Figure 1: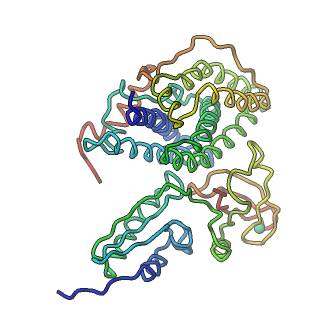
Figure 2: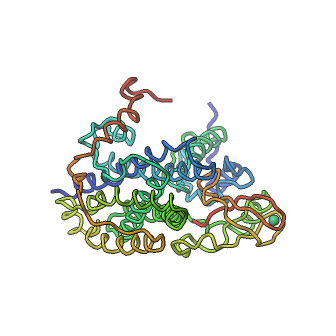
Length: 168
Length: 252
Ligand SMILES: [Zn+2]
């Protein structure tokens, strides 16, 4: 049996960048900020620490399987996935280029920082920039969309519905 | 009471409440008044299932004995559940579901805010994440209750009737016993009297805006800390646990 060379943490990270979010395939799990740490021991056992997005996000199960499968195929002897509950995942972690990818995909990226700043019943007065035409002439149609992370909006300028990645 | 034992019990109180309310909200799936609300209620349900799972996993590590999140969720009997009684109340009409959501998500909002300062690291991590979610639930339900209260004669009557029916279950949410005493002394859990005050302020604000009257407390029903329930929990469990009872250990 040929002993494979030791994987580096950097190369594991590069591999993880290939794993897309199942619901938003234009961004990877690394860009989403789900991967919090990678460690490789002398036996090529890889430990990946991830943090959940939303508590009940069904994509988490998919992430775990995707990570395991990809790393085992690329030289890892064993894969352990640890869940970190702190610090809490936040949309503040999305980089400008990730936000641009979301916009190009037709999802308005989160605008203000964190969910804490929005008062109790004023979300309907919020104006979100339409990802299709760039106007802010929009209105909320539902706070909950096709996945837990998105709300539904309608643009009164280009008359198109769109999804907004909620601040979290 | 030992701290670990109290933490275990406290996990169950929160997780059971979330699980049972999640199960209730899931009953709206395909029955929502409009498609957006169908999605909203099932999304909220999903958040609550996720929150419950986090705490069941924590509880399972304390319990040991091969316990898992699933065994805690599916293999206990009625008297071993400690969910707040309001969470097991039937969905009724849309007004009942939304009023219940205001009452309970406002409670979660203030409870989780306090748990963000807990000396227990797991509770802190759980609460910081869950708080972000319940704020959306509170915003969603309070906006609806304000629309219903200020809507038609029919929607106003129904919303007021919902509040009149559910109000007596709110006392139960703030009951304390030796579990709370232990955790308060360790700086792990908050004094529910304080949570009660801030909760009352929030719900009063919502119901005032909705032009609904907070009723007098009559026929108060409580006992969730002791596993005492209304007649509804047994029916929920018989449906929720059916598969694991009929096919023990089934996985897929
Ligand atoms: Zn537009």
